[in-house]
Image 1 (cartoon, each protein chain N blue to C red):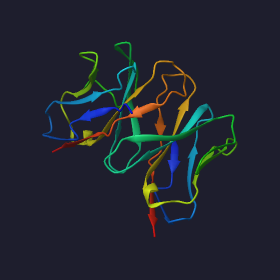
Image 2: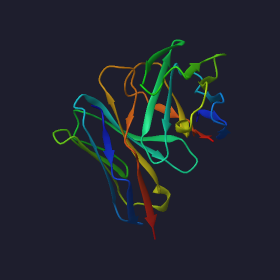
Image 3: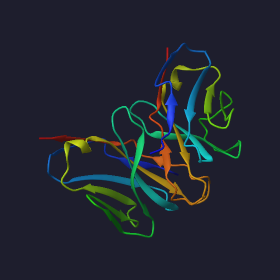
Image 4: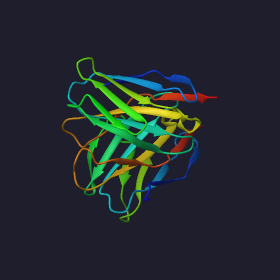
Length: 116
Length: 112
């Protein structure tokens, strides 16, 4: 069964450094999402991406965050200058193309980001 | 506003039924979902229910929706040790690009 993959599984970085989290969505999907979960808290929506542009973003997704689909297969989340409070599990998800709300969002295993 | 609440922990004996509860606040929810997360794995969709339904059954899983009280539950019959995981309730609101709004997750522990 096709699956969403994410790399790395764990990223440790120093405060102020840039990080790029990578995701490979399912190949025929066109809707992409990033979510995050701070330890012990809810899974929060960050951003949705469709047709090479952001379709919706949350208040968390400020100017420090950006997303890109550089080569038609990868979907990346960049944090320009990490803060301690960015430490969380980041989940990528992708969805099929029919546009029906029941289309499942398939999630990757997550990247745990630790900012020191 | 959008808010989904779940109890954080549930412990059951193997073979018993588990009931995981969830409440939500936004009456414009269109679909409600249950996701399962096993250690080291991503979020796996278990089942979903449309907001105009009261109940949905899928093998050992039964979803009950009380729209008046904005209460959703997931019942797992004959709970097995392999059911030990974190279960997330999530909703999609009308409009938007189908972002999921999650609860904090309920950790289900199944013991012999």
